[in-house]
Image (cartoon, rainbow, N blue to C red):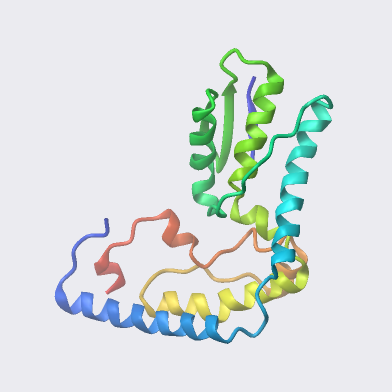
Length: 203
């Protein structure tokens, strides 16, 4: 059954100096924003609510096919950048004895290793729920929370990356971010995550 889901090189001293000065400035900007945010961070209750929504939405997919399934307790780990999410889930499934491979930005589940499909579905839930993708979390943010995160990315993070000589994709229109599914389509770090960047490029 197949189911689809969704060493930097050494640099010369002048280049290194330029890079580290830029990164230091970036760090100061980020620290200043963290010290005095324009909006308060998510409360513990808000984070718990988002976590519960993520788990419930994942488990609902299992219950549709297997009403008799027993929901396992899940410890939710750190949010995973979208580019690294498939590999993380694949490693988790391999650890549980299932065959899966990264495919097209998602995960292709090739075999349950002879185990019952119900067991496979629960394992899939366990791995995907325990390792939430960044876009999945962003999709559960309210419009005001998405707007605040978008403003931080646009006005602090992206300028810092550009100052350090790192590539950062142009942002979408703010109204699109607020009204679509969170920030699923844009992250200022995306180019860095998905490509190798040499120090000469940054310098």
